[in-house]
Image (cartoon, rainbow, N blue to C red; front, side, top):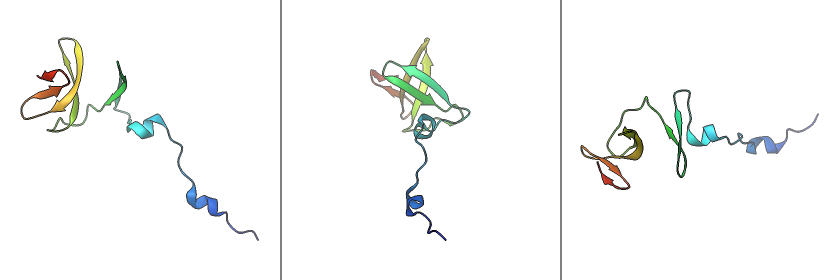
Length: 76
């Protein structure tokens, strides 16, 4: 009779982009100038959360404020 390997206690899951970024079946991956962003259309936009907007055909990523939308260029 053999003893069980103690290495089993330290086994980890394989790291995948979907696991790291929290991608689900309803997620949308968007290519940006800096890489990729993941949007989850099912989640409501709440104050302090990052959201994705399309304004005049341009995609903007920013933070929801008090009745406004804060992006790198300023407030919309």
